[in-house]
Structure formats: C-alpha cells, structure tokens
Amino acid sequence: MNFLAHLLLAERAGADPLGAVLPDLGVQARRVQGALDSAVQRSCELHRAIDAWVDAHPASAAARRVFGVAGHYAGIAVDLAFDHHLAAHWREYDRRPLARFAAVCYTALERPLPAAPEIPQRLGGWRRYRVLESYASPAGFEQALTRVARRARRSFPIAQIAALARRRSVALGAAFGELWPRLEDYARGAHAPAELPA
Image (cartoon, rainbow, N blue to C red; front, side, top):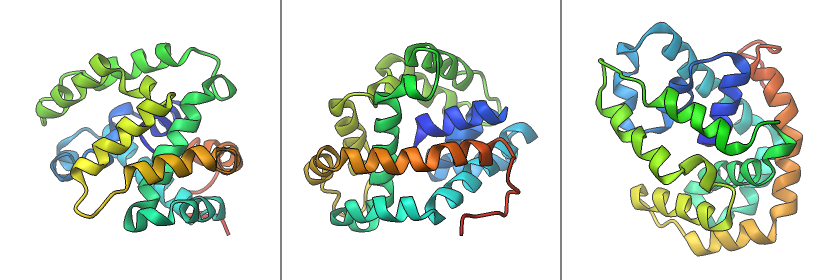
C-alpha cells in the first residue's frame, strides 16, 4: 500500500496521519521518528504492521508476479498500482469525494512539527500538486512511478510497469478487492498485531 491507502487505513484505525506516511518518506524522515510524540510513533508502527501484513498475503505475492519486470522494485510497483486502483474507484471504498478526504489529509500533514520542521515543509507540496488525487488517473500513476524512478538506485522500467498495470488492471483490482476488507479489519485492531495471513 502507498500513501493514499495508508492514510485511509490510519483514519479508519483512529491513527495519526503523519505516522501513516512517515515511514515511506526516506531515511531522513525515519531518523526523526523517535523524537515525535507517542501518537505519531504508534501510527508509524501501524504503518509497518500493515506493510508486513500486505507483503505476507498471497494476493500481494500474485500481484508482485505481475510486475516481475520491475525486479527488486516489484513491491513498490504493486503499492502504487493499489493506490491507483483505490483512487480510481474511490467511491467503492469511501462515501466522501476523494478531494475532500485529501484536503483533510493535507491539513493534518502540514501541521507544525518542531522536532522535524522540514517534514511539513516537504509535505506542503502535496496539496499544491494534488498528489493524493493524482493517483486516480493513468497519468498521475505514471508521475508517481517517475518520482520513484528518480530515487531508485537500480533500473526502474516506468513504461513497462505502466503498460502492465493497464493490461492487468482487472487482476490487480481483484487482488486489491480481496485484501482491502480484511486489511481494514486488521488496521482497526480486529486482529492482533502479530497475526499475519496464513
């Protein structure tokens, strides 16, 4: 799951939105996590537990095989494809317009953070570029892939990943649909944090 899914799951679980995105913001962001308040730290822990749960689920393994061409980055390609599916089919998962949910998230993520003032500054650009809403379109999905490729240390075949996501969109959507209801329950605490799917 990428930023959009993590933020929606955090909201459903009553967790801090900053912790929903912080673990994926890079080394610098991870270094400051210990200096943040306990609510943010607990939300970071939830983020990592969600990632472990999703990675261990057979539907995720099948989705990663779709993006075998991405090699080491297949998991990231799946995370972005799942956010693309969630955004493109938003009304199946939430009653509010995506733009309204995104506005709430941007406000929460832009709040002052004395322990790490650079983080809200960095996240301030999300509202300007409508990052969360952009996942809904194929062009926005490709922009997200491009952002990952800029940071990647190995080859990240954007065009091939985008083409595979288009061709296999039904299978990827089915995998997401299989995961999401159980993942919501997991995030809300219906499952013990150590419980992973068989």
